[in-house]
Length: 558
View 1: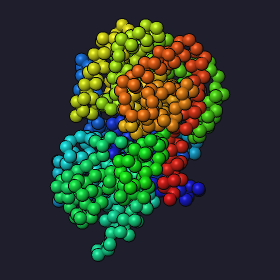
View 2: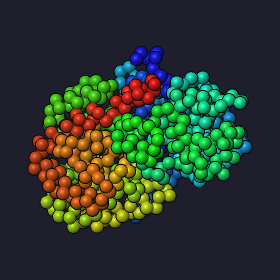
View 3: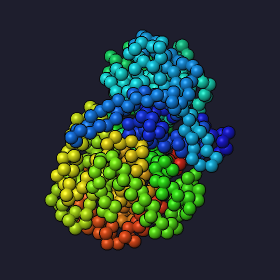
View 4: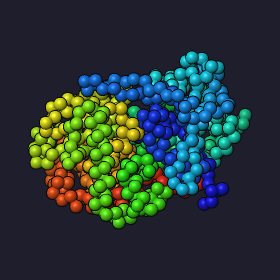
């Protein structure tokens, strides 16, 4: 397909991780969106990103006595992006709300790349009511009315901003249901007075692609119609909105499903689960990937440049990582591990981690279904393993400000760190973000992932670890069901079956004691062979370049 014939795609996401110091993301969804656009730049694909400016960011995590405290994370768009010299109106509860934008460019890292434009929508304009000026301040902040207003800005405001800029798009990719109001705006544009909506709906469906990201019901936004219909005003007939969004409440995922011609989950298992959640809808599977250059350490980038030419543009070439000399791979990992340990010492003011000790890494959003405490289910068993095979753990992650259970997990981890200080050193690194994630995924020895099956949609952090030759020790869910080759790319925790915490904990300890730690301490050459296979078999496959090429061929070019 020649560049002139490539479909022009608008990619709408409530959050996009542009850079570590631009806090327009909270976690995996935003990082995936950023990686998608970074790969689009590398592949010179005609895409435009659309998100919110989120001027106050998500939040900065501060820890006191093991307790999480949140602080605002303001940033100045004018220091990173160019103001777009126009604005568009939307209606919200009978008020006219003006939406401006900032133009940010994501540059590529490979030869032949083309920068990708990202529009950061902003309502902090003097024309707006103070209440409306704050709509693009806090990412995922406020009550239901605030979230509804944000999603109208993203969907309706995003569609109108693209049109006002003369950006004629062939496809609109909705990254999760937050952007689903875009479909109503496209439908409004198609409908003429007196028309039956059936033909207009099919036209909209032909232009929309929808990726759903979560099998957790709470992750699918729903709004009461008593709130929605006055907010929409006369955008569309209210009975039509109800017929598309659900009878009782407006379900943003259902709205996106009904008005998108292509729908996919983010791993094979996740697509299966999604088809069960929304019977009657065809849900394809395009497994997520991560941007290769972004998530490899400096030492690993240099290593791949020497031994796997063109890996940046063609990460599938990493299948040839088997040609990398083991001693060179060992040196690259040692450098990444040293950098992590030095950072940890500086960040905490304590030097408790040692270079030679087997280091487990666990970093992700702190919430119950991720089960951050599974490793500590049986402290006597863990202590017994550590007496034979010294262990240390690096942990990071934020709990949503309203997730009290997640905050309790953070406090419990700090209590465990004090309790196990002399036996299993645990370091919790605060304010988890892109830069810290890159340090951890490349610097630990084993990547630990213990979610409750089948609630892990994908789990891209494990892919980032594999790109750095760090094997996964993970529950069989999300991408790991596809990337797992026992004893070759890493190890499974528990069976591929119903949720059973006791069985998973027993399996985790068995794997550590009988397989993982003995290999690390007693067979360093065997360990390096496994690390190299993780790069070749997982790194070459689970990257955003492969993911995006599939989107182009299977979803965008339809």
